[in-house]
Length: 508
Image (cartoon, rainbow, N blue to C red; front, side, top):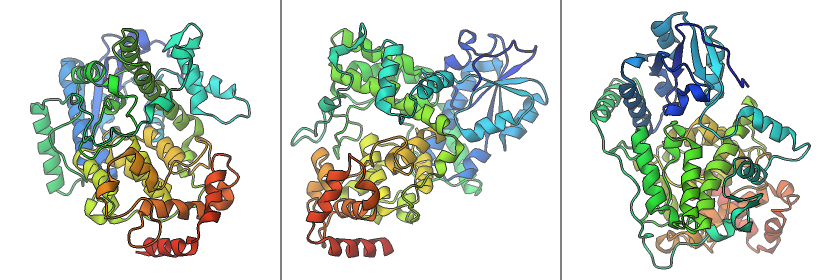
């Protein structure tokens, strides 16, 4: 990966992709283009034709791009074209172009195939490719583990540190951050997250999306209500400020909890802003640390958020590049079942499970839900049903406003579907209905019972969990973190009935 860049030729244009929208992507002091370099942005319709994206996601990305172009004024040329190649040819011909390292393998292959384009180092992350490579090489024969990486980032960037020790004496405060929702509560009672106001640019984007849909040029899934996520740097900073000032304090304890009537809980909703390049991860982590040092938020909340930003997000980015282009094809469990139409259409009417109905409805309406519904409801269902991991990855990519290739390949292939056989995580992330019942209020009003695994009242997650363990018993029984769970199969007196029930469910 490139670590530096020679001097630019006179007249060199700098190309900004649609997820490179913050000031750190055009900062000469951080390896960006000259301060007076002309800029180029290309809105390529072919991107929207490749997949059936969530309508709210398409709206957010186009709105953010067009807002940024309006801010940059005469310095930028904004080209609407069918493909990136056509847009580049129309805008600059064979003139020299620079671009910061893109965020997907496909985009990187594209820019590297263009002789006039020079790729500058990546921006928007704390750790460079070279730094991660040296860290990973230093692991020797050991597996890469997020916890080790997270501690290294904290130390090397002096985040939540007291000298050479972690603040509070512990690196990991997950034990304090796994509380179920307050008993009897319908919401956490915290101030709502920041909500942007739409502009004339949003109206123009919506009109374009309507027209393209009518013409049959593109097809979307989900709803496009009033834009719910920042599309400008100013909006993203306001969202960060509101989170740190009013919501971070209660984030930690309940970050894994779910309530039917409180879709956002105390989550930041900053992932789309980070992934569009509107925010830099360093400023997010530093704001959280400052709030803890001033006594405004408890350490477990600050650490939980810093872990999400500087631990998991950074780790996912680098795993995507470190494992290479073939990683997305991983299918260690041999899962090949297709996704049902009701799932891909975000149709809650396709299931009677209350948790799944609720989460699908939320994703359909907003293009977002927080990490526990993603992992322990949507992803867990896909894993238990044996759905093809590549198709599951594509679905997450298309259906979420913060979904990008680099985000979803490691998160789904590695963590959610365990399709890499343990290269990224030590065990599959799945459970029966007991976990959902403990961490949410979904089960009380559901027709299924989380403790029942066979029969009309059988929870599909409870039955699916045991069926998954049985299908992959040989593999899982040798995993130290799965051994005890697998042994539980021997205590099931109704295992044969359960397996027959699940075969019938799969065939329907």
